[in-house]
Image (cartoon, rainbow, N blue to C red; front, side, top):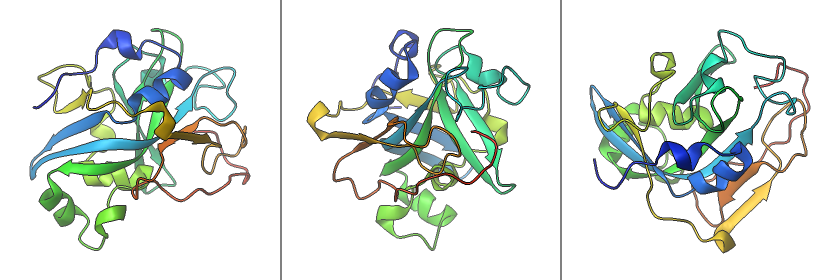
Length: 206
């Protein structure tokens, strides 16, 4: 492991504030085929009862339980019957909130990622939430993982801060509710940022 771990205090804040903080942070994941480390370049914030696009909008369930805290744990969910998406839980324990990890640049373990995604181009090897989890080797078994424990198989590192002038914000991608809420944040100019797709199709919130 290189660099310092993010602390619980740094994530025990509103997800909308935590989201731009996470840009530039690095996620390091150990797998049976090797270790991959990525730099986060695109994220989306989700709250709870006041966010109709959130999985927690209608209350606590076995599926979204991890999203209620404590901060610093990984919330992984299955979508469309085929993909996994990963979130960093943020906010005060007992108040739901998380930041969806949308895209990243590979910092280390590129050979491992190429073996996992042999048909992907280098710039797009982790440029979407499901693609990113595939590159990192994450699935439902990682739901609830403590990202702040140095002994954890998945660790969240502080990385290099992104200058506020390089951060852009806009609507979240593909949500069925609160489509114009500007809670997606990304690093301007990164080739790994995903393509924006406006939501609107009726489906359960994430």
